[in-house]
Length: 305
Image (cartoon, rainbow, N blue to C red; front, side, top):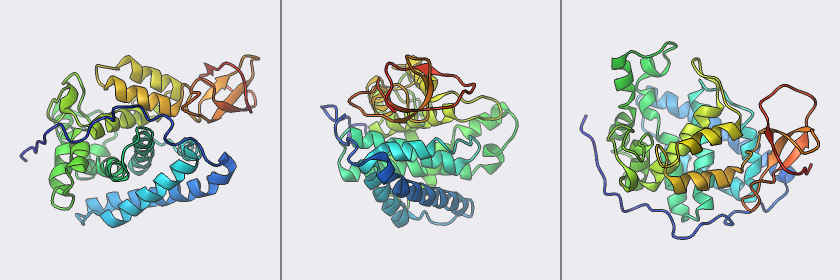
């Protein structure tokens, strides 16, 4: 299948950081119901969407846009509620759940960057449809064993398969670039085209981080899950190598040093779970105490319950 290329200048980072774009406007407890409802709706949609691609139907774009707009509205109220809910469903083998979590994180980063509403929606569409090529390769995507060399090569073509499948229905270049570039690396060792640095769109750079973060916090048949703060540390080790430095720092700023769902140890030795973060104070999350348990923990300074 021929590869489609696009110029790199159409989707760039804003000139100024946007860390204060979406401070939590409502208390966590007042946004939980709406967050739970939209997470459930997104999960049902993504499950059905992947089934429809398996059956070679048209992508349900109107419903996708409506759900993305609703998700953005919930994130603007208090994004911590959605981050908390998504941490309760970490099945690494569930492609639909992986899709939803990556969409949520990508939208959050887009909002924090101060992207225009249409750009944010396009970013969400890229995240939502980026892995439809996997649905076209079920014999590989659902394989319970390590892939042989030819299977790995076929897997690396799934962004191109998605592009070929969607290009007729999705005419927006920003969306298509995010889909086909989400496995590119800034050092040129990604796929399918081996793009480097600024050849990769902002959407591709954001999705690369969001997709990799979610893969790290989920258990897979051949790899254990990492606690969220250790997953971020793993990504930071690849800053400027696999991931764009500035984009990665924005993602870390959004999630906090200890993302929602992290189990942490406070100064007085108590174990707690992070329930809320703010981009203004990423080192000081709001936590709630936990009973004694065995877990990989990080240390936080201070304690707010």
